Length: 162
Image 1 (cartoon, one colour):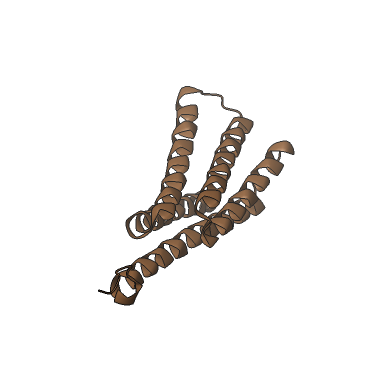
Image 2 (tube, rainbow, N blue to C red):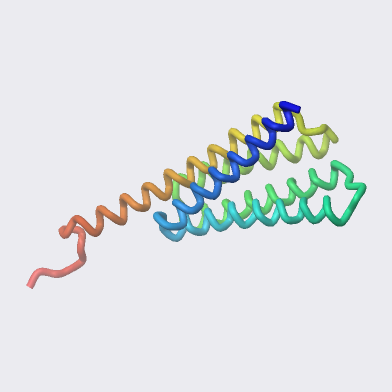
């Protein structure tokens, strides 16, 4: 019973952390941080909805179906971070893209080997996801600092002297 409780506690904690970091990035970050937060929340919510629908509508769901949904979700998220990294060229996007690629590789290896999720999978996935959230938070923090320094430093304006 304690493993189910710890799984649920970590799941809830990561969802709360994701929503908090993505809200911060959306409110305080620039265009890249807003797009990254929308990408993370969008793929996570869509994955949870698809998995919930599979559980509700299909009574005998095979474990490989869930693995496939998570694999597709990880691939879409990694591809989204790649597009954002090419479009905006921020350092935090490169880190998030590489961490999401690690999650995708982890999911792909478990899918190909038909290996059930274990402690190694959960730890690797959660550490990489927390790293993505940290990169997003640092990117939003940096964007806010850049925006504040441009507003408070009048010498950085493009006004021409008379």
